[in-house]
Amino acid sequence: MKHEDLKKFENNFYRYSTFYAGNDQEYTTLKQSWILKKIVGRRKSWNVNSLTRFIKSLPHHYDFYRGDFFKFCLLALKGSFIKSSFLQIQQNASIETWTGRETVNSSSSLCDYYISLSFEEIFEDMPLLYKLTGIHGIPYKGDYADWAKSAKDIEDKHRNFFLEDRDFLLSLICFFGMLKPEKKDYYHKIACLKDDDYLYPDIEKGREILMKNFFDGMKNKYINKVNKLIKKELMAISLLPQKKISDIYLDISLAEDEKFVSYDKYGSHALESLDICLGGYQKKSGFIHTDEGFWEIDIGDKITINNMVGAYKVIQNYSDYFSQTDLDFLLNKKLYLGEQSQITCIKNFDLKSEDMDKVYLPEDKNTEIFQKKLASERLGYSD
Image 1 (cartoon, rainbow, N blue to C red):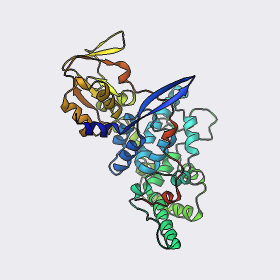
Image 2: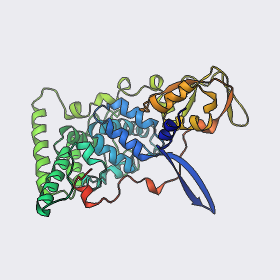
Image 3: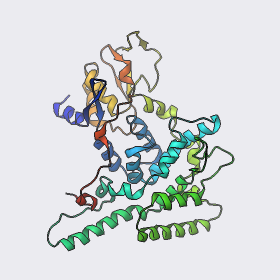
Image 4: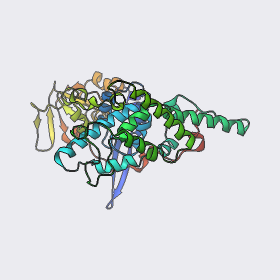
């Protein structure tokens, strides 16, 4: 493989260390910049299923549920991310409804997290705003008053990119309308659409959470603009025969199996848990597992690469066992959008079981997406 191609690929990863109980440990992980640029660069082409597959393929600390990654995707991808998140949350809500027990990402903790989200807080430190909106700032020069007015105009345009988006606002109302913060049980705090007693989002509650919680602290002029737009849209929907807001902006049928990502067709379960699969997606029949924790891979056997991390492991540890064509594909042609790709072994080798699995890495304090920005960045300045 070409040195420059390898170096370019490896530049998407970095190493960090942790210190615990007197020991240093070093880890390699995928740069957040690669993920954020991937999301922003394809923001107009993601649909619910493609976005779901992509996120499932990422390392475990990027998920649909909470944290900086959720906040970034919420503004960067707006409606498509809200719908994808809705599907993931419904999986949890369904388990809790039918088992009466809490899940790992419990509806109690998720509900509390979503209730605490603040648009102003996210917007103030949102990275890559000018790339999302296509509206660039200007460097300071000349008269400060003129520059400040221009910068303020740009900030308003950035804000309006979200506040004038009907799909974003109405999808959020549906999303928040599934929350049940008043519930005393630690589970059931997110409504399940499979529950016969709860068929649709509570629009009035969703609207109240949007205005009182999500938009808390927003200036009145923006609040009034959002309220006016929402009232107009709700009035228009009320005139449509047999139509509900959720039919248009959430599409309740997304929860049906035929519209959700098929585990069999796309190998979604593998995307969630494995970086590398044996044979066709998850198949392990015909492969020999040793007591030492290896899988014996023979000439002609195929392995499936699920994501960037899986490709990195192959290139770093097993490149001698695959053709130059396959390695060039991993370095230059694989899109890494959640698609699964097979490569063929040209020599016998042993594949470590631990290299197949996704791992839960220790927290890395350097990977926070939302960090305090310079004033010029908040105002949309870019080179």
